[in-house]
Length: 339
Image 1 (cartoon, helix red, strand yellow):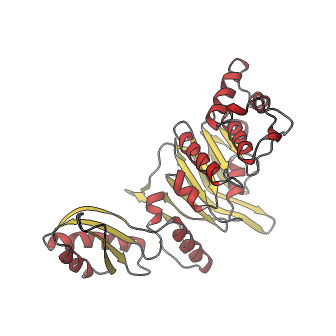
Image 2: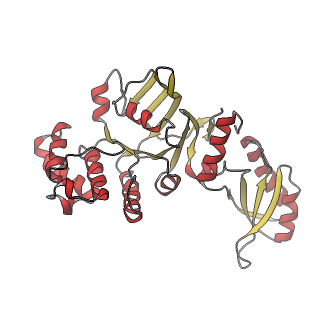
Image 3: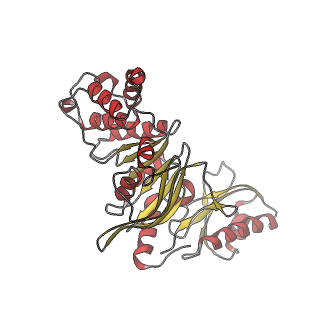
């Protein structure tokens, strides 16, 4: 199994790393839940941690949040090792587990003040922090309602307010939209994007559309192994054979002819309306490795220029994350796959 990772200048593209995971492994007896996982998350990034049920997402996040210890490897949050400096690492994280546990008999504001006290928010700031968390999570109108009287969606929001009430630099959300209706899901996605302005956010989900809607970078895990990581737009280019869309100035027929003559290009199709500049989608041959696709893209541009055509734009024309996930998890199961 090979890890697909997008890099620039030989170094993976990260902002200043707030989360560092290196060689993380977690075993339960003979079962390995997480195997040699390494990644970093930069300041104010919103990262989607993607994988099917049982892939190792929740185990990784529980280790990150200090609920579990690793079998081997190193994990640090805001510069604090989760084993050697566990207390400070946990102070730096707001964690919302799947199926967030709440006290149904408590009113929302009472519960959040209780949680703020446990997280050692100074008494003088506690009320303001709670009000701000309720406002961001959209539950301030339900502040005095018993949690047990709230809908599933509002209980999820209370859990989210709990995660951010101490203003941690890192917020980890495990399946934050599980069980929500479509309107609640849209609201939750918008809130996650908003949180990225002030926090580093890791969102774990097995729902591919969640990642596409709110994350700028993807970590894709399968059977305990990280099989791909990179910006969301670039991860999409891994699906199927891969393709690029090229906008040209000049004759579309001549452009199509030039692209068909490029090694590695399996097909060419026109895109867009006749009133626009010609856009052509060049589809790469099935099984063409990622590095060869980059060379084929350069060859496409060279062929168009040699044909006397202007190249206005070149961009990935990959499929959805669903196609990427299906391709990479199939490769991981068979031991085949891309670079």
